[in-house]
Length: 422
Ligand SMILES: [Zn+2]
Image (tube, rainbow, N blue to C red; front, side, top):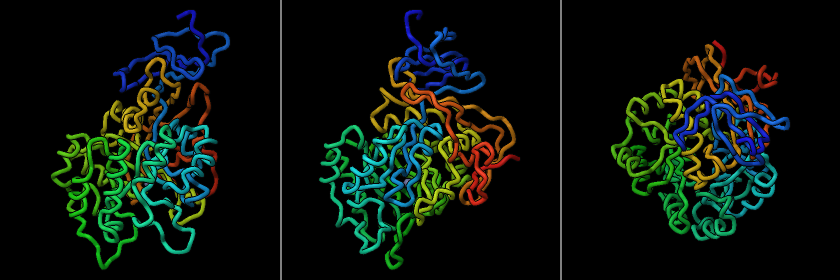
């Protein structure tokens, strides 16, 4: 090891890398933007930056499969680096803020300027979620097509990693399953996965409201292995758990075939639904946050009360194993993106995106967006991030579920909280 240069040494942490089956106490070293060594003890050089991770978890930089980052166009988009590196997330996926028309804007304004790595799932409609600009509503299947989605992917294959579509009551009441079929078509043209939003989202045409029990069976006939069902712990009656509080029978078969479940926390995550789903044996494959601002607001992020590390901590508190929780926010989403040779892993030679998670062991109560609560004695708080080899201290501004306002340096009483000391 003595001839290796170490720019950064992360020392003495519990190194957990589910991708390689690693769970050891030791040191991790970085040179340039690569991970170069993991060993019980590594000797830093005079020029190395040393990060003390004693008592903390060291894992691959977190990959958040579901965020909304196009703040200047969608209104509910949030600050990219506050949702990213400042929250322990080194790769964030913009989940359908834009369709083909405004994708280049997302790239220029967000992807090309952020410290956080950002990739995207394109939305079906040409306009994406920029629907509150006024005028006639052109966010509908007549203003969308699979060919243009595939063509955009051909132009930006490194950034566009999938397509966002819907299996929920609003779109179904208005247009049947046209958007879902279109997602399937775009997927077939490109080989990329689709991410299916489940649980009511769009405005429902009440004269044509579908029976909520019919939605998931239909969705499962269209979903394929590698596709992702979003919002698996949502309280919505047309969602994955459903109004009858039991998942449809076809769900187990779909998951066994390789369809994936994602938490997609957002404003509909409910502890009650999560407990029922976990009791029935449905553990999410992927843990994502669905970080966004107020849907009807313009750059209003004070309503945001949840985060990726908070969602991970909630699943830990519900009894999900630590290794599974870390896989759900590292290698599993990296595989969906087709990027697991580079991110979501601590493989020697892969990109040096790393996070140090400090387990805070004290009495804490989580509050979910439906008002449900859950007590815990452990929450994960990112204390250091290495992004492509560069160490930085996260501000934690959006970590309103795992940190007190003091710890985030905020005093505005209008800022939502998602957890508090007990
Ligand atoms: Zn979302």
